[in-house]
Amino acid sequence: MPTLTYPHWRDVPASAWRWPNFSAAEIACRGTGAIKINTEAMDKLQALRDRLGKPLIIRSAYRSPEHNQAVGGAPASKHMQGTAFDIAMSNHDPAAFEAAARAVGFLGFGYYPRSGFMHIDLGPARSWGDPFPARPVPFAPELTPAREVLSESRTLRGSGAAGAATVGAASVEVLQDILLETQSTIHPLVPYLDTLRWVLIAIALIGIAVTIHARLDDWKRGQR
Image (cartoon, rainbow, N blue to C red; front, side, top):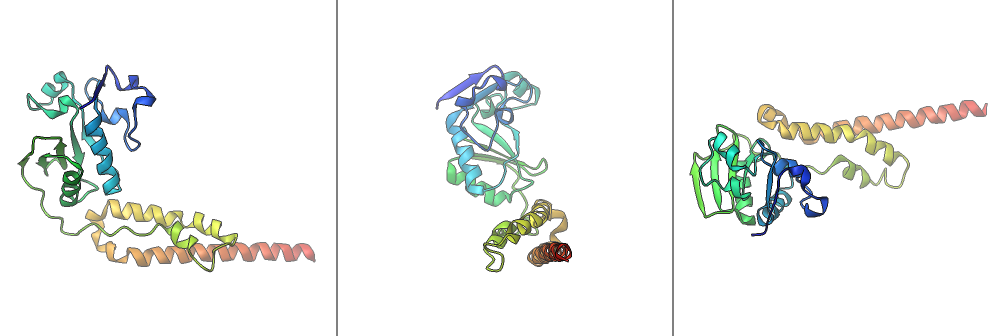
């Protein structure tokens, strides 16, 4: 397992960092800033991020021996080798997350439902802790981004209004992201997401129509 060690994450050269969805600061020791980069572990972490298609919030990655002792880590913790990660489950279904982590090659799993995170490492194969309870409401299916819906519209395709509609629909995507990330508290709204999306798209289109009408009216006034 190739391993790179630096006194501080700021010392990591840009050429040595090849994991686009993570930063050296995220992987470094929270206590000292030192970093040990196990390239195999990082490759699997990036593969897991790609497979899930959503951010991984890292609670803890590499730990220096002194910091590991300070936080009560196991004497032989995999965190000190740079081969372990504690990942928050706030934006993941634990069962789906674990299945994806096993698929990319992680072997060690620690469950911490009360603290809201799951430990994963390169092994040996083992598990500990209490299983996460099943979610009362599953995560809503991913919806097609509003920009793509508008770009495929036969009415708007190729017209100047498409760009304005795309901008107007940005609020739709922001609202979708907020609803999906906080669905554990607002899950009664989940069945109405698709309807709400189309309502907001209709509002954006009405705004475009009003703008076009105003421009035409200004042009006609100028011709008089």
